[in-house]
Length: 109
Image 1 (cartoon, rainbow, N blue to C red):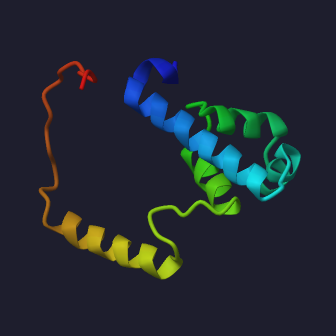
Image 2 (cartoon, rainbow, N blue to C red):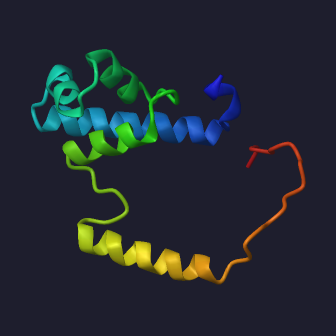
């Protein structure tokens, strides 16, 4: 079902992210079982991550990326916290509620 909700671009991004995780894992000499153990998931979940399966929680993707050394949004916690503060300031000036027209998504770019 999640596949039907995602645009082609989002599915491609997940597959690319999964391939990056696989490449970084093998470069570090980690087996799928080792990564699964560190993530506290099954080896089958690691296989799903590496295939870019949209049913895997995004937090598990992010944790896998962190373990294999792929930086997420920033190279360290201080940069990430700075980005978080900037976004919080930006969100403070946005309207509390935004309505969108219910239109079909056009993902043909």
